[in-house]
Length: 113
Length: 117
Image (cartoon, rainbow over all chains, first blue to last red; front, side, top):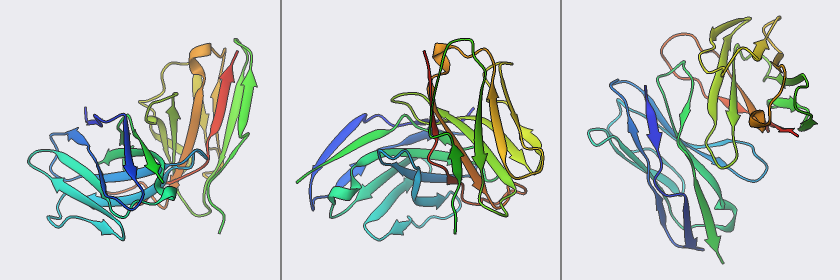
């Protein structure tokens, strides 16, 4: 079974600084998708960024970028120029396309003004 | 347009009671997913519908949990004889289609917080 592990229960960063959240996963498949979701206190899961495993280029979305290391099964999220609105729980997730999402345990990100 | 909606937002019930949680997916989305998120944890998959049928119910924890989607739109998650351990946020998500190997983004609702006293 596929598993996703986030080893950082909590992280904090100064406003305007850069922070990196870690994620590792385990799968025997070669074709899959990886995601980072943000969950504010409102509980709404919001997709931040996604990466297709067949793409070698790391995905970027404005201030958010990933470091995808397929051989190491590592998928970290870098947030640049952190803003107060970035404070939330962040979940790493995996899927093989039209399948369920498998989530990690989450990392609580705090932004210090 | 309207997103995924879930009702009720919060539900408090007593141990042993029956509850129903409702999910209204985005119009036109044929795939619908239910997840359960316990306090301090990531969401865990419960069941996935493609149209009216359950394509994967491997995440349902036991036979007290049941879900339906009779017309391929609205879905109801039903929990019988609730236990305190059922307390969690129940999240629903929908996507354009779950068929085939390509991925279609799952859009999440705000969840229903279930508390079993």
